Length: 157
Length: 165
Length: 130
Image 1 (tube, each protein chain N blue to C red):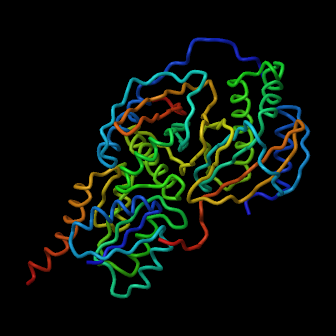
Image 2 (image 1 turned 60 degrees about the vertical axis):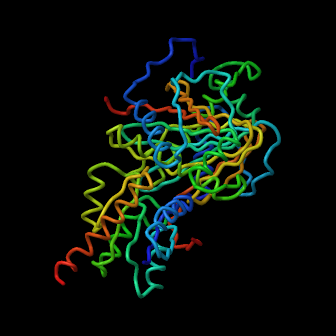
Image 3 (image 1 turned 30 degrees about the vertical axis):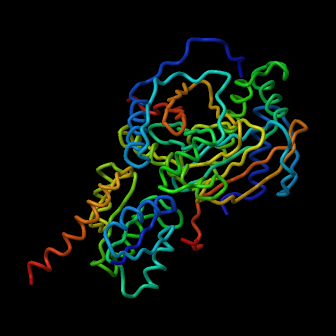
């Protein structure tokens, strides 16, 4: 296993507290039902000794709160660009910290942020290796770790 | 972190964009066999365009960033069916697979012409009506609009050099 | 003729099948990654006339698969079909033991040409010896 639940908890606490002054609580691996309405998924890919991705799934209120903290604006004044930039930066920092847990050498892409109301996200040929639910800024947040399949599972042609 | 201020758009390096334009043309000419017109790229602005199907491929190494190939549903169905040589149901796993394969070839073919030491990631796929894709605003994102007789699509290129060109 | 198509994209395998069906009486086997390919090879003791291999696949990539095949089999024809087009990659594949290399995207004609070229080249020494 690359990262334990404790590793992820420590990582997310450090990042959210230092970057956004959020104090997360951890809900274990029980993902809450997906929230209704507009959500964001911030993705950063990893290549090298490990091929995969870190994905942060958050709500619009979280995005506003993050943008407000990061850019010193009122949450209601945080526009789409602010929210997307805040989530992209958050994902960048989480990805960078996660990379330090990985065997070397690994490299990161730049983050992308998906903004929508009802969409699915997946990485064909990869499996979700970890899912962690947290509460931050009174909003649910899901962290998902994906890794390119390396097991010896056979697949139907 | 300081509040973002309005400033001149960041400069775009044509050496990073031309390979993707050529790659789209080549992939569509050889494997999709659908006449494709690549229109003039433009900087992505707000409000961002919305799509129904997107595939993201990341770049890391001497180049970092991502390229995203995005469609509306009907265009995606027509184009991937043309690519596969048979009708593809948008609800089938083959649909996501075909979308990813197209994005993979566009990125892979461009990577060759970029001539740098870079890796491309496995493709991610997003399916859902009316989503948009954003990146950090300090790296310019170029939209390359593409038109075909069976529907339009866009290739969004958001990459920068880690090392000098 | 028996061909094995190894690619994690089912779409790509279907495209290859469609093109190569033009060769005539062809029987196709498929695998989604290198691990599965080795299992298919082991289950077919009569062997394959040609194996088309993608480079980037989960579980076991194409270059590793080529190496594993060549540990015990120097004869089966192997073509790498991949987006990896840099000269260094082509050389790496040749050193691993492929007989030919085709870069994606390819036209149906280009794929067919590479396959025919590879098959004909393999027959040539036998014809010369006869």
